[in-house]
Image 1: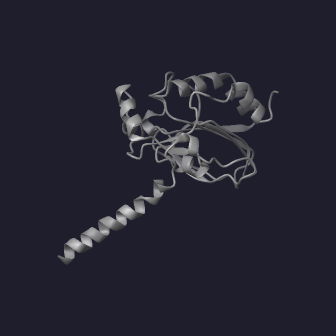
Image 2: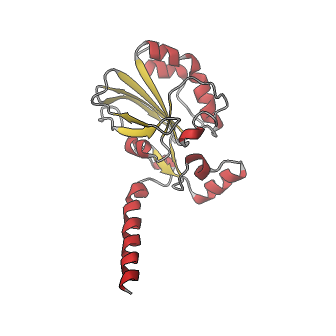
Image 3: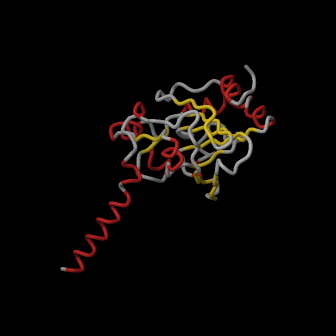
Length: 206
């Protein structure tokens, strides 16, 4: 009896520890509360394509960093946005801007799930959604939508390797001197920041 009670307490404790991880995530994309211009940028750890840890510390990082959140290679709108940015990414790099693309895909799918696997970007896996939650752009996909996506051949659990059913609202952040210098996020995943505006956000172009 005592052993069963102890096991129950352990299971309860484990469940309690896991709940806060996503308890504060809104149920709708429209309800996210992204950090904004002037806020301190959060540090985060994500994974590269081979599963290696990529750590970003905005305080110790010099220069400008652009962080772009997208849903995954399975999303046609994400693929179009990444393709549209192909001509501006080199300009950003030449100006000394680091560009990090954070996806909800697990590491091994970062490039293989794209329409164009040869794309020369720094793609990183935020499959655990730690960075997305830190930036306030994560939301939980409802069960009905999860099942509807499966009808389109999109399995969110297979894509991320997790059963949290979380996705990021597509967003673009410019981080400078540890703070958010620019932010754009839209709950409508079909609307993305145009390449010209991405350049302007970094102080390039008009």
